Length: 356
Ligand SMILES: *Cc1c(COP(=O)(O)O)cnc(C)c1O
Image 1 (cartoon, rainbow, N blue to C red):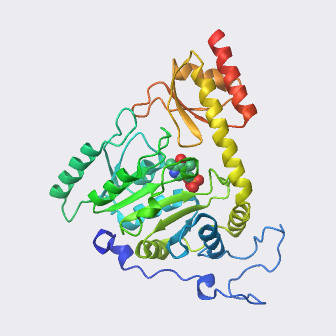
Image 2 (tube, rainbow, N blue to C red):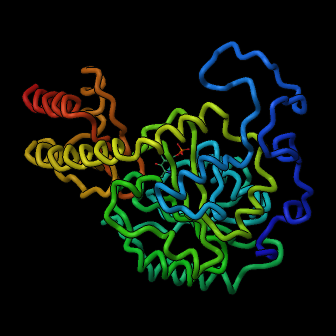
Image 3 (tube, protein in one colour):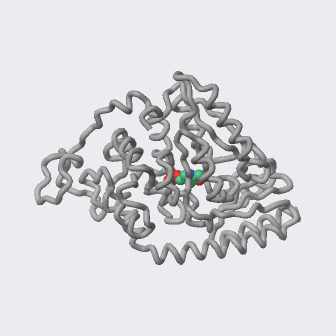
């Protein structure tokens, strides 16, 4: 791990905030220059939050089985992705490997951090191209220098925008092929029947799994993401993250949602049911050429004319995403599974488009 790190992170003396220095319960808090008055009530916004979000992590352990010692909460998984770049990749020197089409944030954070992006595209059916990946990684190993090295590899499973999850056996193969950090983004894990990469953590100290409460747990605005990794990697990110990266109200919302696990489970079943219904309805439409099977809460849909249909739906007040510019996604829209009414409105509008 040490040889992968940025030098300045390896030698960092972490900032220690008031809520790091004192973590117990007390009657009088005069250590953090807070206002004892709370003008907004209920949400506990006047006090600085727990920097380690321990209650949330305890709930994540109890409800989702994410091991308490090996989790770290981020301001959305987006913050965790940025932190990984800032821990491991030296700007202007190191590189990262992406497998497009995939989540756009990886490239944006790489660009912001001045990290070079290599790509090994998915196959046109959106499956992993393991032979191409293997030869790229072998080539990189032979040509790397002290000044430039591939540090991170992102696997998004289920993948955004294609919606498919990769077999765990293939994720495992990637972990053993690559001697840098493998980041498996499981933002849509809840919607999938594929096993989690968390089961590989004992075997691979170079693995980071990302989860989020933004999707299945319906807390996109609270900004709560989770990294699960070896104690060593968790300690590294902990040392450099913003001390109060996730606000108290957000931590409270996360606790509240995790306390409603039964309701969320029912909500998940409803989404899966709608996913099934929506796929059937979309496949009956003549403007739809292909609905890719989905392990997530959205579909990638190949249509006759993505730009025209996008604008037609827009005119009807229905917003989808046009992914046509992504690799292998010519004339593809990405459509989130909505409520029964929302899906009905979508399908009705598409039928109108066909008759227009
Ligand atoms: C939505 C999404 C996330 C979630 O990001 P947050 O910052 O946690 O809201 C992460 N990865 C992928 C692939 C996503 O689609």
